[in-house]
Amino acid sequence: MLNLIRVFIKVIDTGSFSKAGTVLNMAPSSVARNVDSLEHELGVTLIKRSTRKLVLTEDGYQFLEGAEKLLAEADQLKASMSQVNKEPEGVLRISVFESFGRQIVSPLLPEFLQKYPKIKIEINLDNQLIDLNRENIDLGIRIGRPADSSLRARKLLTNHIWLCASPNYLAQTPPLIRPEDLANHNCLILSQDRQRTYWYFKKDNKQIKVPVQGNLCSKGGTPLLEAAVNGGGIVLMSQWMMLDLMNVNKLRVCLPDWEPSLHQESSGEVYAVYLGDKHLRPALRVFIDFLVKKIEERLKNLNAAYKLK
Image (cartoon, rainbow, N blue to C red; front, side, top):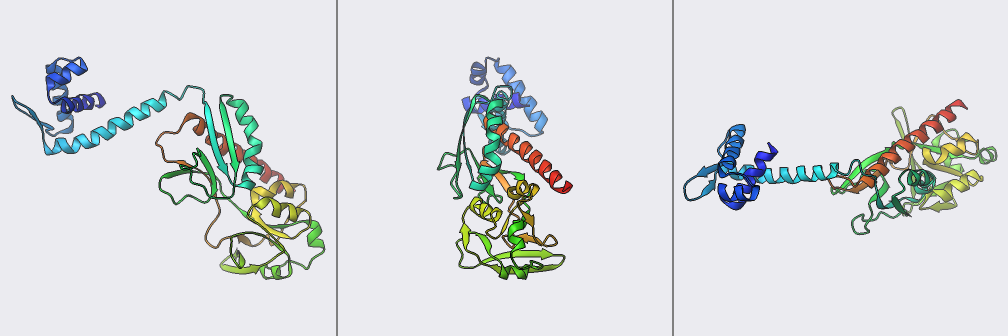
């Protein structure tokens, strides 16, 4: 059907069967038969014929608009498929928030670059939300699905939040039995530019909003995690940041019967986001696929090790 549509559009562009035939290297009678076949398949009349000129019917006008879009998408898809068997190449510019970039993405890059030697990566670790288009960034890794409709997103992991502290800290401080006991503890706070910080807890049908305070806050998670490991206080942070440390007993989960959260409504899932082109560059496509696979494997192995303890 696509070939019939191409002939139909060429007839409209040139204004006659004979001119379309010249461009397409077809006899005018063959051009006319192609248009007849298209009309028969659609069950409508697209063109009114006369000895002087061809005139589009109302159905013809409606079909032409959709047909041009269809052909453009088909051509674009065909072009993208021609790249499937080519080795991915080119520069990938990536922006990722600091803690996830240091702990998860950066250690994976050597393996990826060895697998795809024609790809070069430029990575920026930044907790600021940047404009991918304006900053010429191919891929952003962010917490939460983007609200911008021009961006596409693929989930990298489902986030789980844990309340943790070092064994040394817990041995020297008052017992932590319920969320309200956090008032007696030094809480290491992820800065959200608010005067007051709250942590949220849920258990069965009960929900609690607990005000917390402490002597250290940071826009990135790495300083808080280091402080927690060294006995500086209690931290509320993503599971993927702490599993390694828990497996070597540098951190322990507090209040395991409660489900904690930094935000009342957000789960904090991590997404790979990119501009909404219909067909990805091969280099970007293979990098996203690689991330999804490796992150899934890493968390599966860490969780298995933690459950064995």
